[in-house]
Image 1 (cartoon, rainbow, N blue to C red):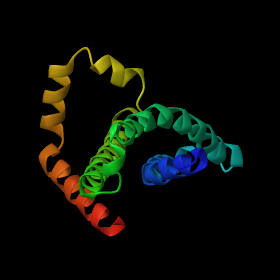
Image 2: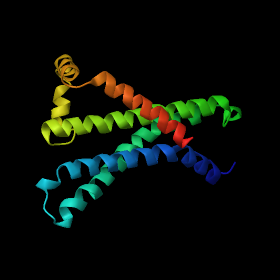
Image 3: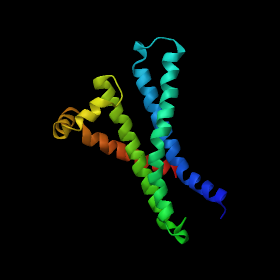
Image 4: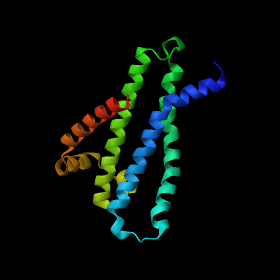
Length: 162
């Protein structure tokens, strides 16, 4: 296998993760923009700048995530590539990634609803008071039904994609 073929194989393996991540981030940004539409002017910069800036932040955020997904195929014996175990791990990884992306999107919505900002230093400060924050979240939101619904959505999305 040539170097170009190897790079192509890696890209084909990573393509669903890249597309899912970028689509999720775009949809979150769009939803939060529409929720805040009443506070924005009709100037195109108010609508376009956050999307272009966010896209570049998404690319930078995506790079370390992709490294994790590249480790598995690099450690996999060549004779196992494309076999049942490889496909099962790939599908499981995609389902987990889909679940996490939807959880992140839903969490961003609730965070926006509370603080009118995306995840920022407030979320980092909450890490200091983890116990209190988790208790507050469990009391304030229907966490178990939300996670169950997101899990079903992830499984449904996985079935629809593959």
